[in-house]
Length: 151
Image (spheres, helix red, strand yellow):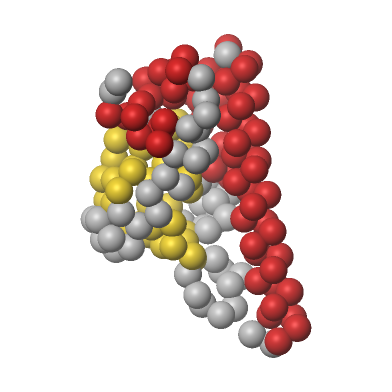
């Protein structure tokens, strides 16, 4: 099994996917490295790829975050996924908190692959939707705390 496929198999997001899906996703992924402090992308910029953290930590900062507490993402987590499903602007600025290694997928190529392989497309879209729903719930809790407690 390739290193990339092993990494995909170990993630919560993709771990239960069939081998054929993992083969396809591993074949489309590119590896990229960032040094601590380097910006991956900036909030409100156009996004054309999304990332899976292989090693290191990424810091997510939001303009709307009043308390200034950044969100830290860890190995196995995805970032930039909103650009895959939304075709829009980035919803946050992401910086390498530590030296960072990521897998990167080009959104246009991945979307075309998902159209050609509808089972993979369904599973990937569902997995990303679950991640987004989980993050939305956390963000709602954070906003509610700010309203209730004035944070």
